[in-house]
Length: 107
Image 1 (cartoon, rainbow, N blue to C red):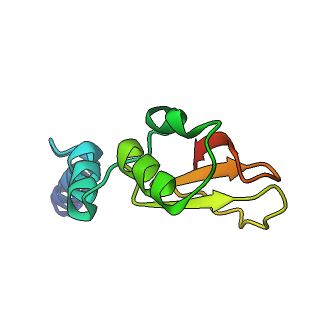
Image 2: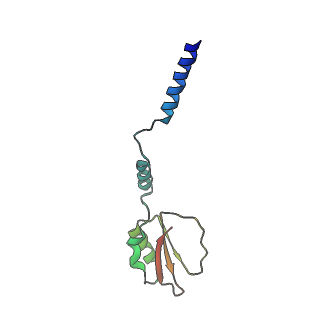
Image 3: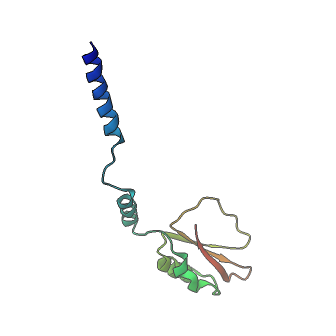
């Protein structure tokens, strides 16, 4: 009878240890696969800083989006309401009352 419990314990121990083992895969390949599927990676606001001081327009927005590598882009006025969602693939061109870009950020 003790051998039966000992062998059951060894089987349980092997199952627990197998569950704790890790594979050689990391999360980085999954992240790059997502970026490859969408065609874009995370937004780089530094690449779109050239837009600061220029009047906001559809052409400027698209040019800044492409340079930043963003999936989407938007122009935000000083009184525009925005949601609190953060999207790492979205470029924001923040403007003043005269629709001149005064800040570029991602989110």
